[in-house]
Amino acid sequence: MSNFVDECGLNVKAGDGGAGCVSFRREAHVDRGGPDGGDGGNGGDIWLVADHNVASLLAFRDYPHRKAQSGKHGSGKRRHGANGSSELVNVPVGTLVKDSAGSVLADLSSSGAKWLAAAGGRGGKGNTRFLSNRRRAPSFAEQGEHGEEQWLNLELKLLADVALVGFPNVGKSTLISRVSAAKPKIADYPFTTLVPNLGVVKGSEEFEMVIADIPGLIEGAADGKGLGHQFLRHVERARVLAILLDLAPYDGRDADSQLEILLRELENYKPELLERPRLLISSKADVAAQDALEGSLKVSAVTGEGVQEMKYKLELLVKEAREAEIKNSEEIVIHRPPPKGISVSREGNIFTVKGRQAERAVALNDLTNIEALEYIQITLERIGVNKALRRAGIRQGDYVQIGELQFDYMDDDEHWID
Ligand SMILES: Nc1nc2c(ncn2[C@@H]2O[C@H](COP(=O)(O)OP(=O)(O)OP(=O)(O)O)[C@@H](O)[C@H]2O)c(=O)[nH]1
Ligand SMILES: [Mg+2]
Image 1 (cartoon, rainbow, N blue to C red):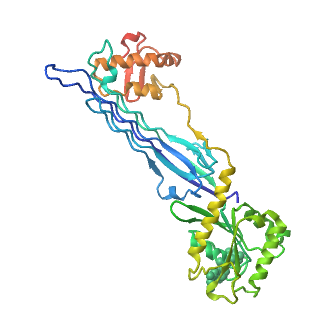
Image 2: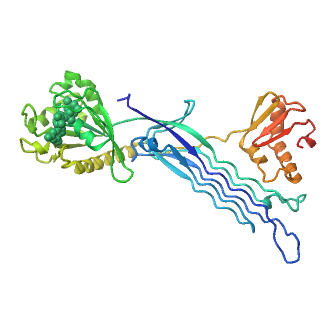
Image 3: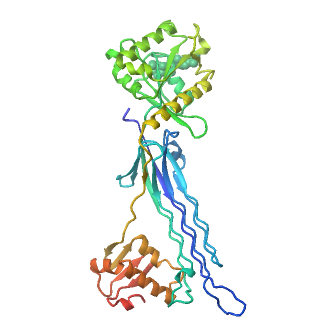
């Protein structure tokens, strides 16, 4: 079933950081008290989490955007802004995450695995934090950082939770079209379905399962008759088998012998298939020409009789099977990409500096403020931006662009910001 790949785009936007505040204490006899501007709150992150209750990427088809909350701004009296809450986006176990260029960023292959898809922007520092012995009344504060945003491509190899197994014409395709959005061809003759169809069935709450409508099996399938091997391979990958027995078969074969032949074929192909959890379904209950087998569930895809109960019973079996797998699988993996350093790119005589720390250093609320500019200069030197620029071959008179700030570069560090 390897050609069943579910794909979709997903846009993730983490929350922005709140701005730091410029504020001074008011005191009875002092014109301007000490600084008391609080910090902005951090923006929320966006994490992708592999959840075994999600079986498809359907949820992203309708709405491919996920956003986390932004941090609140800081305010006076050293009040910090609240952090934005993070957003957990549930994706199916086995989701492969790629960037828009197609490189793999994460492989969420075990239940509970987490990947940081977009980091929230950090909140800006309030003016209180720029107090130093030289700066007694700092009159600038940091802006919050922008939260990361990117388009991702999600890819999932769909694996069936349930395989519909039965003779040709028993109503497998009709049933899958009744419980999912799959639209297979349905007709009143055997061998209508020639390739498997998958449908996603929504269960209770967030639960989803994938059902495979497989071409009909016939006696001798395990020996390869009627493309039997090919179809049995699909059955083999499913967690749960739904075995359909026709109550109004075109050849009049009774349910008992249908079951016997099907089980024998499964056993001949792989004896383990008999240990797979299974649900016996008697189909076409509305036109039954014989009694249903004891212990089987009577269903009519036409009237809907028994369909809800079938969905519910399959959900329980699938949940149980998935839980059992999780118990045997590895521990939870958390993927957090390493922070990126400083990079310099050049276009003509403009040198653009990218990097979180550098961009943060220039994101101050007031760039006309001499104190603020001095602070920027010291910080850029300290975090190695000047060194990186020199390495990139910058000369006096070239321009430097960092975030929204552009300025002339001067060799003399003292004066290189106007
Ligand atoms: N009365 C009645 N007819 C049904 C029911 N389910 C399916 N049918 C009919 O049975 C015929 C075969 O249905 P399909 O769903 O194509 O059967 P299938 O098992 O997918 O058949 P293959 O793809 O050939 O293996 C169609 O004419 C359906 O309309 C049912 O619950 N009641
Ligand atoms: Mg069919």
